[in-house]
Length: 354
Image 1 (cartoon, rainbow, N blue to C red):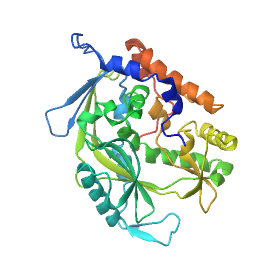
Image 2 (image 1 turned 135 degrees about the vertical axis):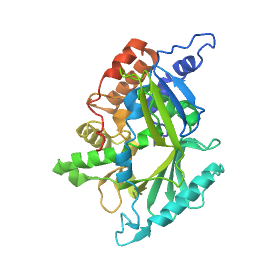
Image 3 (image 1 turned 60 degrees about the vertical axis):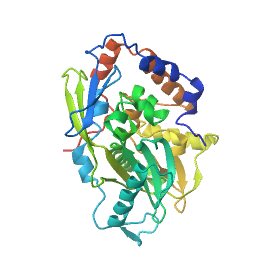
């Protein structure tokens, strides 16, 4: 199983040099106030964290959070059924109480949690208690994807692991926190697309997902300057939230060594216009149904900054496209080319709800 996001990136080793040279800007070099910039602070506070970069894009930073969509898809009151046993139910009040306790334990920098088993924490800064954490309930068949951000962490993509550095440069300043807001909306798009094809509809299963807000989500205010021709932009997002999803029980995961798995995954992703990450670990065979389960539904074009449809013929072709995109953004993104890119509207963008 691949341990990192894409092994090709690690082998290429192209991230560290440009990242360090960008971050290592001379203190004697004058600030370019014409660059895209964001000011980030807790809502109601006067102190803010600032970031200026040619890579910042308005859509990535100010269009992912859709308040109407978020509210419409929050965890319902009452109870929810188990995916594999619909006759079994759990009170959402219990789920909420246990997630609140999880957050309290996270803020105490604990490594183990009372009600949860850790599934992924590579993009989580345990010492500072922020980032992206994936856990599973010990007693209930649900997974929790917890997102915690602060004004400081928002403008420091290097503070939450290796992968967020790539996301920042490729996706116009995007981060896991912002990408989380796309997961349910993209899931709806994927399900709609699957229903349009009888063959795929009979082969693919997707988990249910809901948003959840804690009692005190710590709202973050983001102001943008020079992010597009209009200049100004503004949004307020929750600093802490979670996505609750059905846990998928699998008896077989897709393998990059299996030619049939590779072919099937790429065929599906091409059909979905790469709205799904082709990473082979995102596909598995669901126990009991024998169908292919999609695990990760964040909007992949937003993650890597794709604005036009692409077709991939093989995983080698896929890695090459990603490496080219990454190198282009890291090495060859001049101020003028960045402005041109920022003005270009994406044909793959998710619509906002009214």
